[in-house]
Image (cartoon, rainbow, N blue to C red; front, side):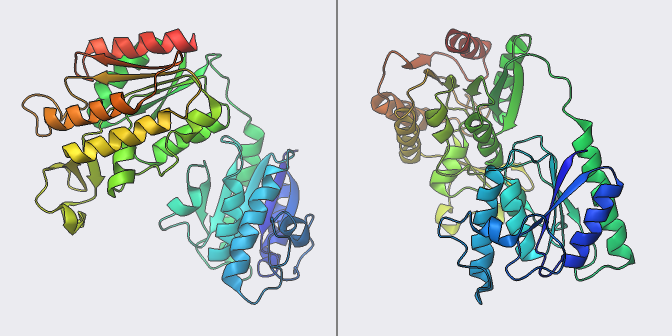
Length: 396
C-alpha cells in the first residue's frame, strides 16, 4: 500500500481531509493526514500542526497568530523543511484555497521529480506558475469552494484520491540504462542541439530543456539533485532576460548549480543576441526605438546592443569562474542564433565581438576551465561536432 500524505489545513478543511482519508484507504492506499493549519484541527490527523511548525527556523511561534499572512508564509517554509526530512512519502495529495495551496505546494516543490504530487485547489484553473514552479505538480480544480462537502466536491475529491493512489502504484517506467545529460535549446538554436543529440543519443539519455526561464531552472534543479551526468548548455539566453528585464529569466542563480555540483559542463552563447518580451505593446517604454523581431503574435524579440552584450558576457564569465568542475565554453565566431547570421535581422558583428571579448577577457582559464573560439555559425555542423567532442572529453 502506497503511503499517501494527505495534506491540508485541518482547522478549515477538516471535513474534506476526513473524506479523503477514507477515499484513499478505499482505493488501496495508506493515508497519512498532515495538518498544516494555524489553529486546532477539526478532524483526526496523523501529523499534528505543531510537529510541522517546529521545523521553522524560528520555531512554532506563529501558530494561532492573528496575522494570517505571516502565519501562512511561516507554515509554508516549515512544511517544506518538514517534507525534506521525510523518506517515507510515496505520494502527496493536497487540498486548499489560496493559503493552503501556497503551504502545500511549497512542500511539494521539495519532493523529487517523479514522485506523484496532486494539488486540489480553488486556484487551479488560473495562473499556477507560482505554485508549480519547476516541480511536476498536477493541479486539479476543485470546481466548488472547499468549505464543506457537497455532491460536487465529493466527486472531485474521490477522483483525486483514486488518482493519487493509482499514480503511487504505477511505479517508475523502465529506464534506458544510459546516463542522463541535459541540453538547452531555443527555436533559433534547434539545428545545433538536434545535431548534438543525434550524435549522443546512443550513449546518453538526452534531455532537452526549452530555455524559457522555467526550463533553465528545471535543468539546474536536476543538476542540484545529482541526477545529471553532464550539461551541454548551448542556449544561455535566459541570462539576457535576467539582466535586461525580459520575460524569460531563469533568475540570478542561473549557472549556480554548475558551480555547486561540479557537473561536467560544456556551454556556449546561444541566443544571447536577444531579449524576450510578450506582444509588442508590452515592451517597456525604455526600449522604444530598438531593433525588434516579431517571433509570433505573442512573443517579441529585442536585439542586444554591444554594451548589453558586454554586460552579459561579463556576467557569464564571472559565474563560470566559480565552477571548479570540468568546464568547456565554446564561442561560434560567425553568429550565435538563426537570426544572427549574414542577411538576418539580428546580424550584428560589433555586438557579437563585444560579447566574445567580455567572456574571453574575464574568464580565468585553468586546466579544467577552458575557452575555445570556432570559426563557424552556432548552427553549423562544425560547431555541433565541437560541442560533442568537448563533452566526450570531460564526461566520458
